[in-house]
Image (tube, rainbow, N blue to C red; front, side):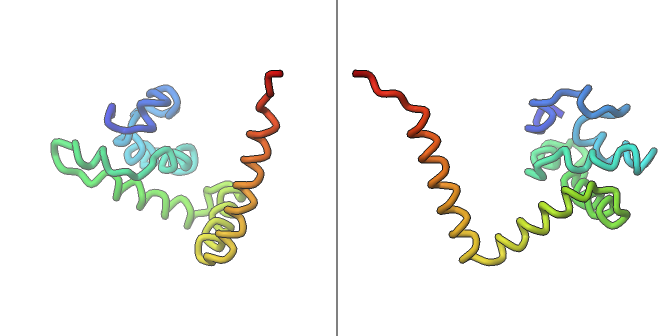
Length: 120
């Protein structure tokens, strides 16, 4: 569990389930898919859990499969679906991505400059 960057930051109680950590992400939805439908999204899918698993369970692959199940059954909030659709579109069109990147950079620079104070 302690190899998981999400678990290290949130701790076991944040999972709200019997089993915590990456293994809990794949076990708990088997008990109640709807109740634990957001657990598969408590992962970066970095694969560190799979790398250190002593019995070589492909935990990150299982988590990814649970994500697909939850999406297919419609358990995702509509905001998640919308944000994934927008991200997929923008990342699939380089010209739009670069335009958004320039706008974000300008906003960041303007915020940074406005928060700086000059000393006389």
